[in-house]
Amino acid sequence: MAWPSGTRRIGCSQRVFPYISAMVNNGSLSYDHERDGRPTELGGCTAIVRNLHYDTFLVIRYVKRHLTIMMDIDGKHEWRDCIEVPGVRLPRGYYFGTSSITGDLSDNHDVISLKLFELTVERTPEEEKLHRDVFLPSVDNMKLPQMTAPLPPLSGLALFLIVFFSLVFSVFAIVIGIILYNKWQDQSRKRFY
Image (tube, rainbow, N blue to C red):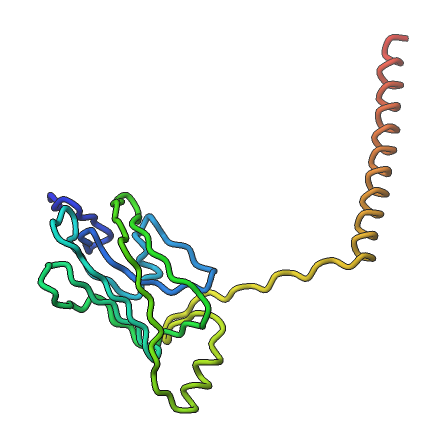
């Protein structure tokens, strides 16, 4: 079966590229290039934006734990829904990124401008407390691997003991090596008598 240009078959379904997808990461996930990010994808849509003679636009909106991505790729100044994901929990002070590379296919896209706005949204005290308590990015009904805390640094005494016993073991190993080498030398000399 012949697949259209820009189409990649994965399993029993196909995906037409360019493709817009969204993922939430807490630092423990990596993008799976072999499967075009499907294991970590929240949603996505095809966006045919190659070789157009007009500008295309993308809106990423995050309001009250609701992520929405809309696009205007037809040059008609009309927004079309692409992705809508409720239950996204993003902490304050983090970043979002864009990429135009997936697996086998890559494109060159120019990001002409990036406009960020902080929306003022009326929240109840309960919503404000829930928003304040978010420390790691997550999505309701999606299990993200937990990040492991870094090990605490070794104390001075622990570092000294590790170095000391390493040196003692090294000296012990060298002495045993010398003894075994001398025995081998004695054995090899006795063969000629």
